[in-house]
Amino acid sequence: MIYTPQLLPFLLILGLATSGCVAHNPQNNTMTQTSAPGMAHTVYFWLHDGLTDAELKSFEQGMKSLQEAPSVLRAFVGKPATTPSRDVVDNSFDYSLVLWFDDVAAHDAYQISPTHLKFVEDHEAKFDVVKVFDNFLIK
Image (cartoon, rainbow, N blue to C red):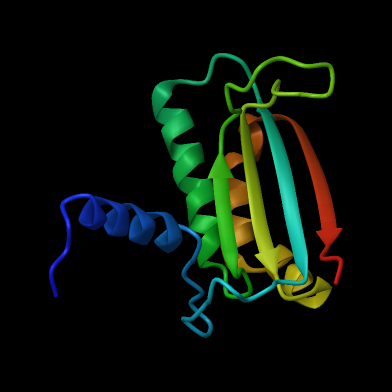
């Protein structure tokens, strides 16, 4: 097959963009881009001032480890975006975490999973404020 010089970069970018939408699920090891989890668990963290770079790096690694909990379908770990300031935008948080689950039962299993309990044990001293927003998918 012959590709024009412009088509190959487009295909590479498309492949990279879509591969980021699929996360590892240790339980069934598959997740398709068309799968629709039934619940999103969104957590915003405001951390104590004065944490060292090593403490922040450890916190980030801890958040990333949460995607390995058996009932987690997808995970997104982030920091505030540098979008324009507007009255409706609150980017005062330090980190955000979004985890997707099939349903409330999967969320509840996550809450008592060793992965989640270890994260809380290792990092809760760093939390100043934590806000959680749980949502169902509208079908």
